[in-house]
Image 1: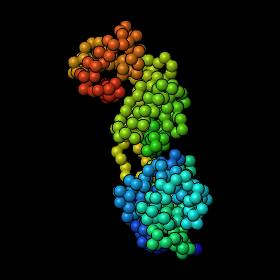
Image 2: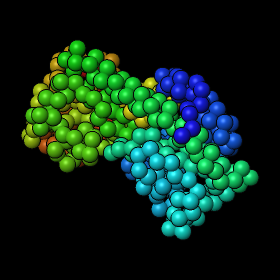
Image 3: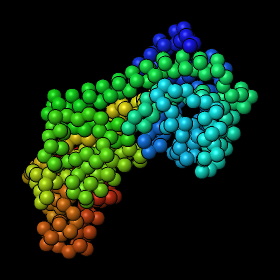
Image 4: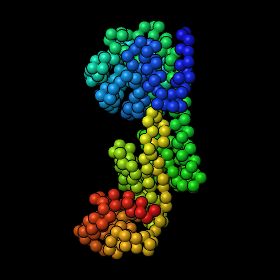
Length: 367
């Protein structure tokens, strides 16, 4: 058993608390093991790349490597080895050699050739339902396969890396609880989401919405028991997660046939980006607030400040309350073409182009 390299445990723990230090620690590991790269990578349960930290790897190499199609166990022998490894086991080139013939394509093999990283060894630091966090040496053809002494040194590094990774995950999860606690103090329903938009913490008022069935969790994400609303919420969630949208709003009935004060306004807000997180830090919040009924003041603001006619202002309030175009037409006693004409004028006066943009603006103006 090789003793843990002097001081490395402290360096790993410092990186867990100040994650910008991870690359320095990985550089140290690579130098000590005479390897081209050391790597810590997070792979989600759907084999998406949560993060990929590698010393000495430039942006173009990351762009080539950090693709979901190259993280599938059917195409990537390192991911396949990580999924089959027992806890704390170190796997190396003999496992890679056994797995390579089973791959369904050569894309990852070609990548390893292009980046000159065919050799190395690895272990899992964290593994569970959320995926795995792996720790690896990536070695060039010239550096050759790992030998027993290198793997023993790597195992010693891994013990410190495992403690540090677990600590950072715990700190990120505690951050989610802290955010939820802040909303508890304000008696606001709030779901705290990670970068996969999974709920990591929630306030007591949010728990109450789940208990009453107004909202539900589906595979860890906030959804609605009503299919149409669930689809709208899913689209808003994807926009915030994948399309760089800073915020989105969805009006949700608390029960079938709900209207007015029985409607909930769900607001998704993307939080400032936190570099060097392992995917468990707060990424976004979803708050739920009871829909307030339209007031004369709201209607006056829309008429006076934005020049909406009385009819356009009333249509705007119905949009904000979550009514569909068909419902608005029926309620106003107008045809679809007349409603479209009103909406075109309304959008122009509000300075938006789409219905979803109008709804979000109305929520912001009249909250």
